[in-house]
Length: 300
Image (cartoon, rainbow, N blue to C red; front, side, top):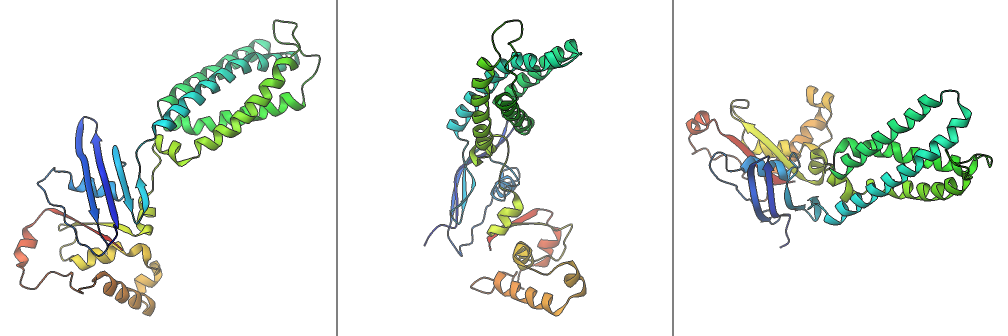
């Protein structure tokens, strides 16, 4: 029998507090697995990592051969760092090109000179944020890369041969044309690299919980103070909501389609034995007095 859910060396830290440390778990299809432990042992943190409500600090999670959490790629970190420095060098070279191209055409030369310095300072902060894997730098990088690509097209197609490099007599095209070719190709490649999954995970992007639920891994949360009579079967049926098609109107008016779909979900949620409910012999007082949170996992 294959493995439906695979957890390998899963770890999760909240600042200096480590909630999970190298948890390894394998669950086969149609197998029921329980997680037990005292309060604060990390049970809910484990469920939140499995359902992608939390992003694990380390380790891997696979559900039905679909990776839900993968370790951070060291190679991607190095590539981002190298490309960030190349981006900064291209910015240094673009600054005199920017002045040389626009200063002869404007009356506000001091303001344009200061504008070039301001844009370069933002570029420097952007590179620092990109190396630190900050999400704002990832988003702002696309604007700067598209800007570089547009400037590359301008330098390659609308460059006046009479322009010279600022403070020199060197023809501008000797520097602008090679910069345009390099910056244009670099910008397109860097945009594509930032959109890859391995790089996006460096900046906090992950599989969304609703996508995990649609793939078949559902998490339900039961607190007896909120749902006094909610039984195990109800929890499992709640986990199947991503597979059901009854909308708000059909559910409110209890149409024939909704009743039929709910009955089918009840049969499917009962499992192969058909008994996931609490046996009548169990004392109800134990459920009434319990204030503990109950979490149930099932691959639907």
